[in-house]
Amino acid sequence: MPLERYRQKRDFSGSPEPAGDDRLRAKRAGRRKGLFFCVQKHLASHLHYDLRLELDGVLLSWAVPKGPSLDPKDKRFAAQTEDHPYEYGMFEGVIPSGYGAGIVMLWDYGTWRPETDDVRAALKKGDLKFTLDGYKLKGSWVLVRTRGYSGTKDSWLLIKHRDEWSGPLDITTFAPLSVKSEGDFADILAADDPAVWTSNRQDLPAKTGETGALLAAIIEEAARKKLAAAARGGARTRTTHRRGTKATRRPAANARKKKR
Image 1: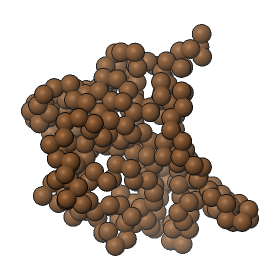
Image 2: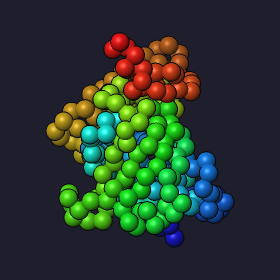
Image 3: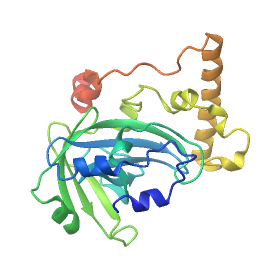
Image 4: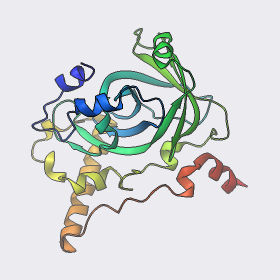
């Protein structure tokens, strides 16, 4: 079962994450056009970005601690993780406890196209070249397996190829918000339940250090937003979904124009 490892790690009675529909997986298996990809910004025990590429009805997944870079000189470490269900691709919300506890933001999504006829062979070789067409990430990329970090086959490098979509812009700072809700982590938590971790600090996904301080500030900000919304008569804490603007559709190019 492709999703067995994914399901074994989660308690779906408490997690809002989708368990995955095997009928949908079978329906999408074998597709080679219009393949889905997403990047989810995940604040858990540490902040990281999850790159997910659809293949054979599931989402192949890599955790990228520093997030994608548009600069071809940057080689971003990416740890391959368990396959996720196709439905997970549009997930955004709060995982209250257990594996992956934290806040998940849909940071980018779109379609991807492999630059090879045999994706499985490329993965086995450890050299997968592909093209992304998202709101924030576009153009040609490569995932290269390496033994230089942890010494396992699960260690890869995510590298942007030099093209019209590459550049020195820090895309994670330039475009930090959700492409689904246009909110930040505090907005996502406020729309759910900012009190989920306030009753018992031991349940916090991150308790100490820089990540713990970041999460504490987000919880405080989310609580303020929740109270402000209640004072306005229950106004929605999230903005409505709007498709990418010119700034997010070609950030590197727009940044260069601004400099000129």
